[in-house]
Length: 376
Image: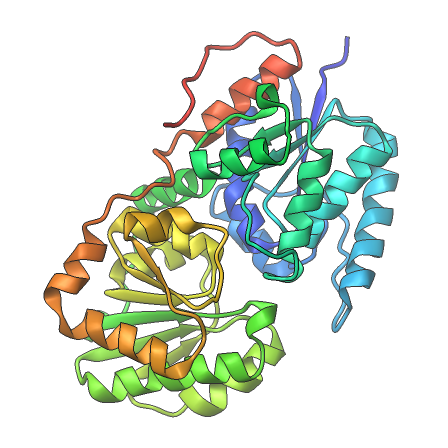
């Protein structure tokens, strides 16, 4: 008898990072065939992220085109996945998070009546319009999913309130914590050894922040560098030219600012560890940085990861220049304010989320494996 096939679908760098530990966990089982498919939504940086874990796609749909719209991404990814799934006939499809690739994978699984598992399920904000289009993507994936893997009790409660069957909800912790712990333990990198002061890391890429919001973010960061002479600002530049056209004119010509190409995942983990403070609109960074005791100022008006804000590891500051500047100044100037965030306990996991997901998937397929206790 052929082994049941479990297909995991990724399209972007954050997905690759969070799915790679699940791929490695599933491949420990000889009872299934684990297949990784890339839509190629963010092709180059996705492949480098997977390479950090010794993983590469078994299939690459290579849908990326310059300047394509969300509709074009959706249509091309759906057509490519549909053709491939007709050939593979998997027993289960798995996707992570809230990208267009995730939505398309869920939709294709629904059309082909393939059981669908959603990793990092249950994250929610108050309106489907923000963040755009991620909030819609994850809600739509939740409508279709047969297995929900929320990272925390808060996200599991969201699913229960929406009427999801409690027997399909399994709190596993966040696979991003698996990824960051594995990578930190295996990677050697020394960022800016010549700089003896503090490093502030800035990452911003979200669509809702394009234009004036990112300009305000950049101006706030510039004010912090100018006020604190021991600070080196490191800006990990997203490859999207829309982002670069806003940030570089403001931040690109200062002796204590480094606008760098986006590092591969493993060096980026070490860059986070090197940082004193992080300013970011990245969901992954909100989860990963607290694992190292690094405070995060979240450059968004809403977040689907309120657990970090509640725990004190992150603070929601939005995109207004004066608010970002004031929050950053407080942490750079007030040692007690800094320690209250740096010493807060991360609520996102213990590094075993992928093992829990493997156990539940195998059980769903009728395959015995050593049981795993869910994340509390």
